[in-house]
Image (cartoon, rainbow, N blue to C red; front, side):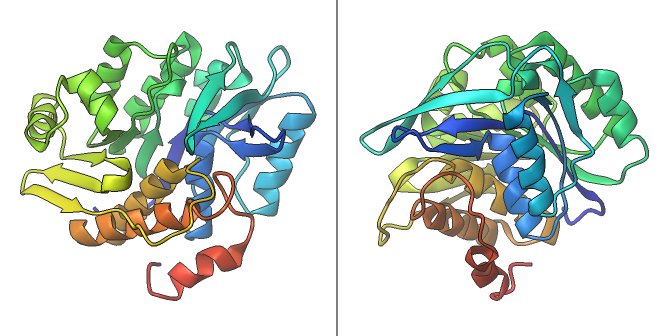
Length: 295
């Protein structure tokens, strides 16, 4: 791709409450934005938090990391998002509360914010689709900006429905999902079904993550497979998929060959599994990748 502009990230920012009671800033769009900021891409995130202490924490954290907070809306009636995270055999299970501030992203304010803004792509997940207000804002932004769309499918029961998810997929250029989600949306798990899914929805690329087995990239040129990193000490896997997405977006922006993007995305996802939580508040963690010419 290697297009001018910066990424537009739309969706939730929230606090993941881990089993030991520790609160970690999270939400797939926020995690991706955090990583992209560290990579130097200066993302513009459109989200909404409450007028409450957690909302203040979100803004303060973004400011401390150098992120643009102009797209952070404040909600008087609803709280900043919270998710209870349970770990089962090292895998996170998310208990997501209803009617959070991020469900009420204001369409008009978001549209005014991005008017005239050069954007390289628009990224969003699935949770932003669950409420009509935020879903309407997202569609408005995709229509107004006309930037190519990267959809990161994150199906969280009961907060998704097939019609809305597939509609968002059909507006995208790139779609990332795990093999279980491919099975739910396409009816099968193999690369042939991923290619059929890609062709049916007019996508350039489908990325299928397969956990410990690695990931596949399916595009018009065929299938590229790569194994996951195995020689690591896993602390937790929270945010590994978001780390993968961030580096793949970096690769699109920098014009890397697909096989390079895939390998580096898996490497960074593995690195995130060696630390607790979904983001790292340490620039040295990122600099080791930058020093190797990633950005």
